[in-house]
Length: 224
Image (tube, rainbow, N blue to C red; front, side, top):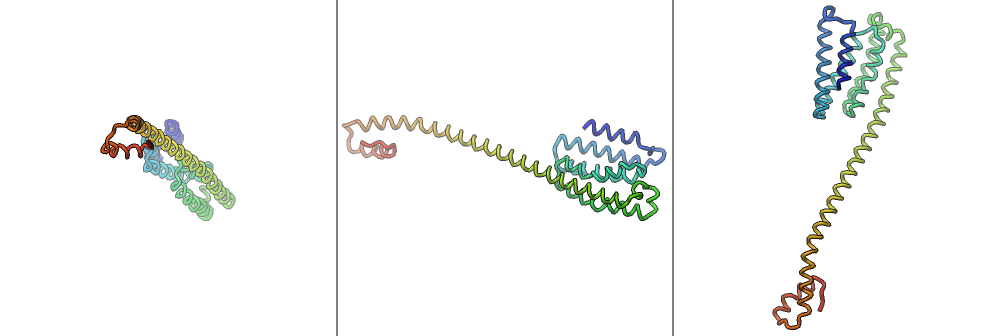
């Protein structure tokens, strides 16, 4: 958390844009970074899906924003391309689907717009090889899809394994409880059985007494 916050703040401090040159863009960056730090902090504390979704949304907007604001920095296209890595790291399936879909659409569309308009003079590194950049961008998205599939399968396997462990623990607890209850029931039954055996050996019982304890003997598997 501290490292991410530090890197984001360093990104602002080394930015070629200053408050005097463009206060609106700097203010927007500060708002985005503050929102990312706060949402990430709350996500770590609460593990709530809302804060995770908010963090993914803000960092996606931030990376898209950096791509368009810094036309002379070629690395921004790469950061744009690997944006779907964020939901992969946070194990957010829906977030990945949304961000990856946006990238598949916005990435090639952005390169096409830049190469066909006057923006090609601003984003020279993109327009210089627009076809190759488009292929590379799409290839990165495909690679990220396979990374997501592998990661998601591993996470689901781990979750299923944990569920099996929990079920085994619950079954073990139920078994121990059943054994304890059976033991507690068997003790008084043993005492009753002992007295019934003594009565079974008694020869001077009248008919009424025999009628009363015979069912008990039959239920305890004691036969005269």
